[in-house]
Length: 287
Image (tube, rainbow, N blue to C red):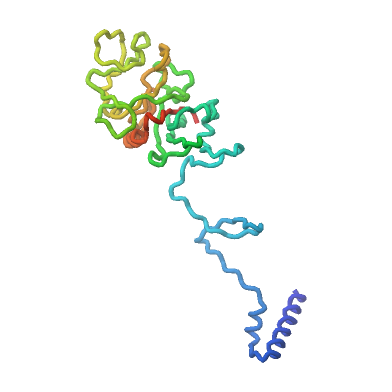
């Protein structure tokens, strides 16, 4: 400390002598200010800062810009892959035992379930194979079967089947909404057969002529739930009796008997986004 005081005094004396020799009039206070280091400005507690490294390695304080609407699964580099794919989608694809090359769809709905609750995301695939969260549909809180999801779906088990499935046509009791999907209107004679012993198991049937079933959903009797819906192509080809039927994406705000449900306004946004030209699919998994 004594050395610092001595050095400061010597520098100040030299500064004053130089000023006098040059004929410059200067006060002691001004001279002291000229040789003293600047006092750093305090950082206000009301202005949050984030330490960031500059190019030369020094650390500076940068203002934090809050994200008013953070994306739940924005596109970013998937750790350890170097691939720009949404992290949650990557995790769920891997969990399903798939790779992105296995997904032949250009639109994909991800249903990430936790029990009977589900987070629903919609993605578009670009020409270079990268998936991006669709902004028009947004992040949706929904539901699956009351008993969660299952890789061994059975008729009447209250579970939603797990896996990757194509989406079929849209249908409903309401007037056709804006959508790129084929639309089928429900009539007073529309049934979806859920009797495993029927030749019409897991099929839409109009009328009861030749009916060989003991159980079927009369679609017109659920005008709110089936106001707008999309068929999930689960067990629709090479139909296995008893493996589950009538799996739809439809309007509902509580757990289902095996379908995927979301509020009506969300279903309408999804329908507006969907296009059968993009071969849409749905990936359903426990998170």
